[in-house]
Image 1 (tube, helix red, strand yellow):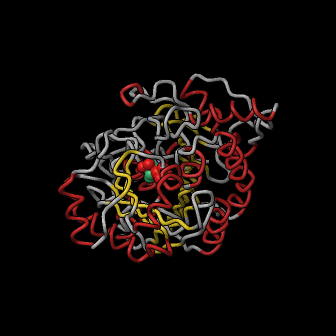
Image 2 (cartoon, helix red, strand yellow; image 1 turned 90 degrees about the vertical axis):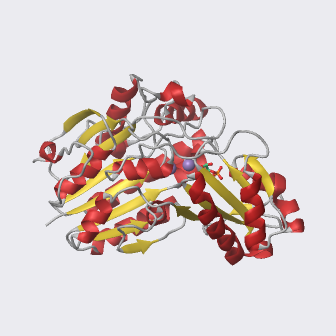
Length: 403
Ligand SMILES: O=P(O)(O)O[C@H]1O[C@H](CO)[C@@H](O)[C@H]1O
Ligand SMILES: [Mn+2]
Ligand SMILES: [Mn+2]
């Protein structure tokens, strides 16, 4: 009997996808560029012994043609490759759902890059149904910047800060105490129902605390309201077959709570990894343990903080032996990403990139998986791992993982 562990390194792209120029992301490479920035800043390359042993650096070089300099580089001892995205967007739900066997082939609704960016009729209805005195923002923005700019006015006026990005998203930032967390969630729930007809993928509650624009800080009470995946994912299939699907971090929210049998939350990268190791110590056979490591994206990618991203990657690398130590003989570890978010690119949005396809089981023979046509190859492999019926998308590579 078997288990699978997926570590979704949110935004860890490894090179511009063939269609990156359509997204304005020509030349993007989250991993290569953050490593270059680190080396320039510190005068020596980052050491990534465990991730290189898993083939991450070889995968990035193969995907992008870049030549990467790290310390403590090891020969790959896992299966490593890189995958293109079939889905039309470069957003979090598309990446996660495609990885789980359900690419998003339709176009999401997006808000235009103009101010105001939200349809007036939608805002009028939101105000009427929730009793809020109006909204602030109404534009494309980076979440931390707009809180610094409008947070004090929000606290004075009681008007929530509403903004979007190049993702299909309606985000609402409000102060946890002055506005109240429950009221924020209520506003988001109403917005969710109103935005279905606009085909918006996610509404996100962005609570923050603090006294003034100098110290406003977002809290871990973020909540994502996603539309349902367009078809059952491998999570649903495993849960229906009686397996455990254990969400750690944002996973349950991203899959709109579909196909999840247990949920754990933990604040920050180290706690999420710690929780993953703890759950691995106890999870029964036929469990999928699925962790989203959001800090890479939220704290460093979108904030264009390449050095912070590199240091977080080092934290991840240092933790990996704890994950290996909890693996049973028939466990499969997958490490991948949902899109890129190159911290050296202009703006603050995601970047259209190849994602790493890393698969490891104890005692395996190292193997190059090459270029994969879709993230769904991983979902298909998970289906094979648990002897589930074949998914509609993806080419499984379980056969390549024999010992
Ligand atoms: O700038 P913040 O608020 O972190 O927002 C980012 O987070 C959203 C969801 O991942 C993305 O759409 C992007 O806009
Ligand atoms: Mn993401
Ligand atoms: Mn993001």
